[in-house]
Length: 412
Image 1 (cartoon, rainbow, N blue to C red):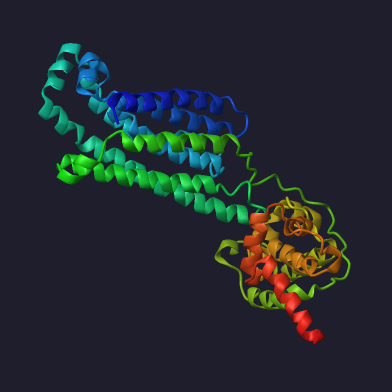
Image 2: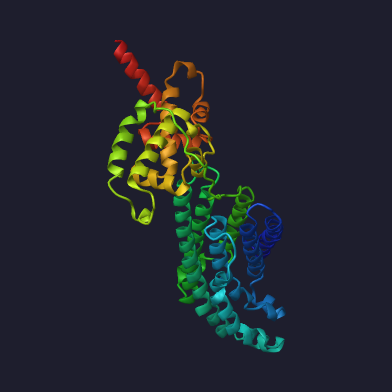
């Protein structure tokens, strides 16, 4: 690939990055996260231009741009982390403490400041010393940038893991908010940095084969492509409300007698018995008494059977708590400790049970699996199939086939 082609691709990508950054910065949904990502894309676009023209002749012509590309990658890692933190609402607002993540970049800036302040002639003299300039290119600053990306990407994956646990305690449908694309982005960044580490040390230690194969600009093609993809995903990501102000009703709802569902009966009896033996560490300071907990559990199970709130695809734990007249915290404690589940699994076991009934009901024989899923409270075929297979060990189609075969055997 010619140098001119590489430059066209990278500069073209940088220009499109500017457009994407503008769209992100002006979008009203997820404002803070979008602006952090817009900043990251701007910096990557600038870095891509510097990489495109990373030739000795270019920097001899524009010496004041030399070593700018050393500083920019130190900003990528904390921005990726802050983007993850703000998008998942782990810490929704910027805090003064967030600035500490940019400490390495600030220290490196002051370290490079004497060079930045040098005259044009002094910088050209330095750049003409090819051996010294090449040695500095693969010095401590480059290694620090790589280490920071690895550290912050792993940190971001930890944030995402906590986020997933949190939404499974709050929402009954995760398809639009699980941020699977962000997880893919972070793993892709680990792949990119792994390639960069190998190439960096191949150049530094002059490993013949790797030095010949690898070209510095190649992984920037991947970075630019993936940044566009992550920008598109962010633009299409709805706002995530992980928690809402608790609203408690003044009276506890009077609930009718429970009507048991045979599909769930055995499981509920076993989990209620095994889960009531003690409170988890998470709720050690809870004010919920044993008798109250048992009463709320009975009300919850009765309400689930008679009112079927799980048929609402967007049901959240706050909404269910409001309907029962209990606090969200106490409801979460009951589901976690007395039933041994998170909210997501608890609600979806009822949806699966409902789907099991509908799939074999002659009145719903003309329904597609997607239509049955929607009737049972799911709003995504992918989620329905995954949860159904997890809880029953069969796909919906396999379940219908097994039931049909059993019925025919009984008829014989």
